[in-house]
Length: 246
Image (cartoon, rainbow, N blue to C red):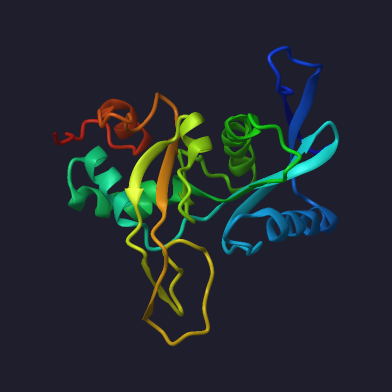
C-alpha cells in the first residue's frame, strides 16, 4: 500500500467549520504522473515545465480526496548557486573546506524542492503545512529509494515572489542567484534541464531567491540571524572537530 501522510486543516473564518483532511501521496503510476504534469502546466505561476532530471520523488497533494496540488524533490541544480556555496563556507569555516567537501559530504545529501504547485482549491494555510509534511516524508522515501540520508532541502523562488510559504515553514533565506547560467552539456543553475544550445553558452535568467531547510539530525544549520550551529552541522557533514570560522 502506498504511504500517505495526513494533517488537519480548518477552513477559513473566525469560527472554524469541520476539519478538512489533507494528505500527500507518493506518485507511482502513469496516471498520477500525468496528473502532476497537468497541475504544473495549468497552475504553476512561472516555470510550467513538469520534467526533472536525475533523482526525483514527487507527491500529489489531496484535500478530502480531491487533488489540490503537487510537490517534489530532486537532484540539486549544478553548479550550486554562489549563495549556497557561501552557506556551506560559513558552516565549514572556509571556501576551501566547502569546496573539498561539496561532492562527497554535501551534494549527496542535498535535495532540491524543484516544484511546488497548489490549485485555487487549496486552503490559504495549506502551503506551509504541506512543506512541513513534505520534508518529513521525503527523508523517509529518499532513504528507502536511494539509500541516502537527506540533510538539506533547498528551493529557488522566482517571478518576483517573496517565498512567503517557505518563510512561514521556517526555511532559511540564503540570498539571490546571479541570474546567469550556462546551457548545453551542463545543468542550468536554476533548473535541472538541458538545452540544445552550443556548449558553454551563457544566457540570462531572472535572479531567484534561494531558501534552505536543514532536516538532518541535531538541529538546524544556520539560524536566520546568521548564528552558526557549528556542532550540529559539522556532525551532519561528518566533520566533528573541524573549527568553524566567525
